[in-house]
Image (cartoon, rainbow, N blue to C red; front, side, top):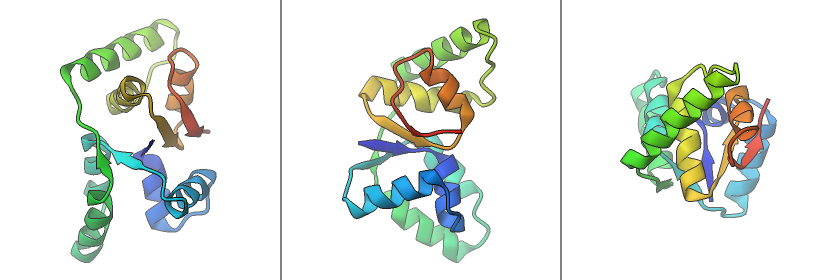
Length: 132
């Protein structure tokens, strides 16, 4: 399974040609299991301007496998954030630590276009596609 980060979805829906979008398109063509979590769902939808596009994107995202977050996910996210800070790598968005923790807990790959995940993967067992 692959959890697709907001950074890739934004490029995908904007029609941008990035490595992450290419990987996503291949995963879709190969009928890979694609996952989503609440924070990615929220981030993607909140940036949409028109009602028609909002409805279209919501229908696409609704077909993905939803990964719920437990208390343990948030504890691991806090642990990741603290550990990265001690290494001098402040993670810019706490949501990224939650996404990373969810992937680690569920042993799934993360498809992203955000350097903070690369930093996390250097210290924690986060399996990634893409990156900066």
